[in-house]
Image (cartoon, rainbow, N blue to C red):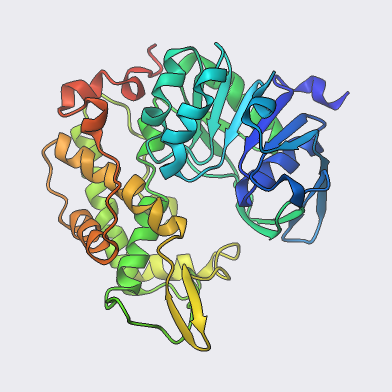
Length: 373
């Protein structure tokens, strides 16, 4: 049977959104036993469909769709978590009674402080895994039915706590997506990935720099397709500050926290702007605004772009800058702007986890579980 090639067969996907639908369908299409935990199980008929950029279809039959965590988690080997990062802490508490040694919690993407949120699960024997980036761009066509996926990556990068489990999970993901999945030296290489926390926040800060309560916009611009020089300039500055933070953490191998200038092969603001506008899988996506009337739009502060990428993305980077005693004026200015326009009061804070200096950071689970463990 097909599933015999895989290390793991029983899969739980938590969340029925873009990424959750993609993962569930991909696993089911390979013959794996897939359960989906969804708040809307009635929206499913049991079959999911991925449509790629060539309009080719991949179908998968789901074993169980349920809104009962107790029913969903029974006998599972891997739990894929696709919730936004601000839900990690509550989810970790909810699943803790059902955790058994060896069960794998794979967060996609693994940023947002997952290693801290799921610390109690790790303590009782769970293996936490996280990917730096999701396998491809995924956008729902219809909830519970189909998802459009474009731009499958050439490779994936994964870290786990404890580290010894990395190889098996990386092999599983390589087989699942038919692309290489590389093992990272420690989980901070996931946490500090300069993806959405740098990319999205730079664009939003510059896009809505003139926003005040009551202001409206006459259209919803393309997020990447109309990327601006101003956004690239801020992105590069924030990316530079992140690299400075990494250079201060001398005891850790953070070589896989690659600068976005390297990731996008763009050394200047002009190059970066042209690159981001040209990515086919991204340049048709709109910005996080909601329409309130004809030709009248306002920022959607309930979007993950705001609720995750600032308070559980850029905020983590700013927290680490404080730990290493490094000023990050551009990151701090962006965070202060977000706080001012949203009055959001829930932010990632390292001191909540008992970390307030670099020595304690070095002995926390993420750095400690390196390839030397």
